[in-house]
Image (tube, rainbow, N blue to C red):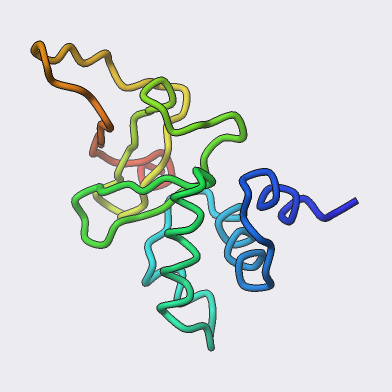
Length: 137
């Protein structure tokens, strides 16, 4: 049986490569969303373009989602296994203004958005800002 990370890639129709498996391992171990510059720091000799293409492939195949928390570079976090990145899967993100970390709050869905007639919803980015539990200590 293939290792768990390789299985996750295959399940999302992503060809497993050494770099993709390493990036997925980092994303799995992170408890918060991570930006491309932060990901680059985890790899000494990885090419920035390769890391970017890996993230974009993961996002396209709905393995990760992107978060623009307003703090600078876009951040990325793993989707839940059952996620299809549909409107029903949207959740609130929390950005800590002290440590600059962004958390996925999967248990808090984005409130229903009622749009005017002939408007259609593709995505919602709801970011709540404040101080996280770790920084309040």
